[in-house]
Length: 375
Image (cartoon, rainbow, N blue to C red; front, side, top):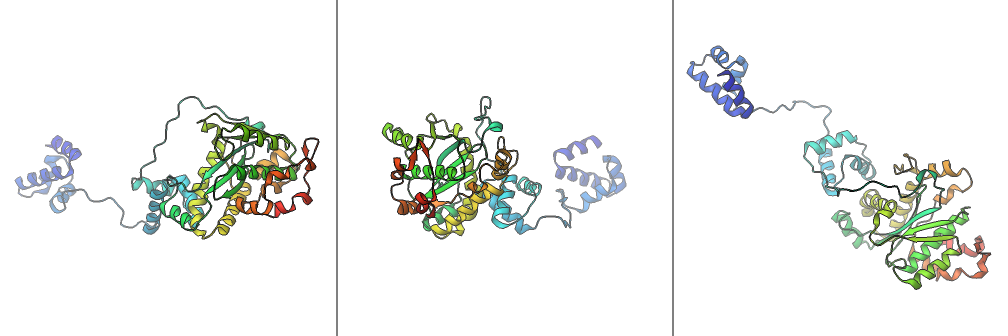
């Protein structure tokens, strides 16, 4: 009987208590005798006699350190909406609501409520670094790409709908320095090779005005917003940019892993900028102002844990590699709307006449480009 009870207890507590009741009834309600027969305590017999068949909850009656139920519901709501796990969700809640919640607390809440993890695609093969990150000179290697801001798969439905309703910019132009992870961004309402070239030229002029004199190499894909597979258009780009000491490098079709740095920046744009701040912007001007703050935070304050960064900000990495050769103000790049710049400077490529060039090197002056930088 002792062995039978304990085996039954493991399989089903309800059936084990029914057995206790039967043995207790056969012994005329004698608690002590029933306890000896089944090898259990008298309290266990009384519990089966007086209480319900199923196990009682082990939850404590008082939990002073338990997370407030409303806060827990907010965490679960945001977790389901964004699909973030505890580390990214903690940063997201801090940015959006100003809530400082421990990663371990969020991890326990997600586990308790059985919020599933997102499945990731498996990676086959050995990892190979794209650059020699530790020895890269700042502002010599860049990755250039455009971002579709209206991405239904990345943004919550309410954010996506608000961006359409408020007529916010639809595309972003991003140039990321590989060595420091510093970013330079513009936005536009339509993709255009003209806007992309205008953005690249503006970035190069900005770098040169802040004492960047090294040769610059820009990696980009074969998108139509650049020059695609048009040989004529590529020649135009190379003719203009070669005068500024820029070399273009296109990736093979489909080799998006070669653009991992700028693609990762796009992911952070969704998680830490658009999802958090886009709903607060009711017009393009407000959006550009928020985008400027986001870029400044990225370049000066946001820690980066990518290869070769070791948790430093772009500003800290620039100071450690550069000293005082390049002005730190280079990181305060103005975030603009490409259409607004177009209205001020007209055809940007026409500025690159031989009158502005000497010996194949560009000589930037405030006089020549004062209207450009006022844009």
